[in-house]
Image (cartoon, rainbow, N blue to C red):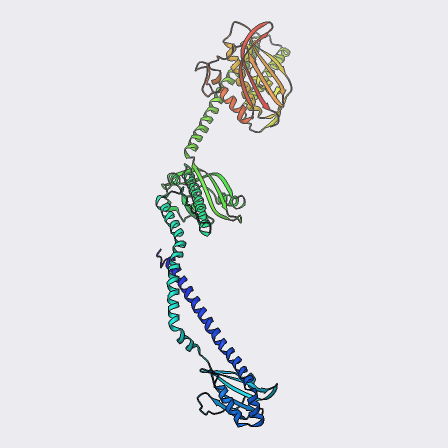
Length: 601
């Protein structure tokens, strides 16, 4: 910026102009007073003339004495400023005229209202007075007085005026310099201080002054401004640091035109700021989302001023970027949108890991089902061995009787009925196994005791073959849950106890089952006399693929799947601990599993 003149120069000029103008006004007032004073003096002098010459006017007008005219003339000469006079009778006829230079002149006609008539012409003031004697009006007198004009006054005073004006200019100039310095010095100090602040870029310094006036207030305001700038600068630094986070940031105007992006935006999307600024975020669209998706997003922004969710956009190179996106509207004091601020993080890698985990879970579920199916096949073999043996014995006997020709129709009917009952039992067993593997993801109300009984029917023959005794303490407990998944968990726990007891030949093989209610929870409790779980591995038994069995005996996913189903699908808990206890006066130690499932799901 170019500065035309300084405050100091302008102040000097202003003070000198004011002083000059004041002098001119003062002299003009004097001239005006002088002119008015002349007029008043002339009026007073005219009345004096009328009083002094009243008797002579009477002699001349009433008695027509010629000597009175001479007396009037001699007395009028004593009035130095009176140039001429004309005396009129009441009939407005002139009877006497006087001229200071004794020159004759043309007498003017008396005006209709002479007393109201006065006139200034050139250097002459014309006045009219009554010619009276002892309060008797005899006629009129026209008096012409010599006066000074404004030009005359100025010509008379010009030298003095020039000296006074020069003196005023001289005094006002030095006063202007002095006060201009007094006024401009604090301002120049403030300017110098602010220039130092600008060059040093330090906002911590403050300026002080002893002035207890507007300059002091100006300095205080400057310090307040610096404090605000400093606070704003710190806030800007914090905002800049916050803006340059690992999250991509986009700031748009109310029309969703991009105003600014951060470095993380470029890292995630591949676009440089100049490539997207003034454009809308639709430049990132992947085409994977429907128009309804975006309509719902903008509807939420209009109503709630906020939106959060996952979105798939395109990288500049054409690759897909999965983002967790949050959009927040920024409002003004009238609750009108002025900006939109969007932040997002790249969850592409996270999504891939999640997909891999889901695939791993699917494989675990599949392996769990295969393992369970293997267990089921073993259980089927045990369940069917005795019934098939019965069928085999009956059919063999009937064949022998037929060969020996000793058949009996009644006996054959009984044997065939036994075969039919056995086949029916086998068919029912197939239904039980089929229902066990039935995919059922709908919750329903069922009795936990009945669920356990159905599961036990599938494994009891296997337990019997291993001389495993089951001690039951069962109560009717209702539960709203996934029955088939609970069956699978119970099956896994029964199989774990069976496997642990199969290794023990030194005492009775016992499994204890308790079903009861506790604090609005359904409790399934199972413990065995298998010796417990080693303390160095008990914290790892729920991890996938962890097993204490030989590779050909276990996959290590049964308990992992069990805790997954209990915690994630049933909102429950699966706990384990070792317990030492006495039963029938014999001391045992075994693993205790406890399933806790809320009844009010």
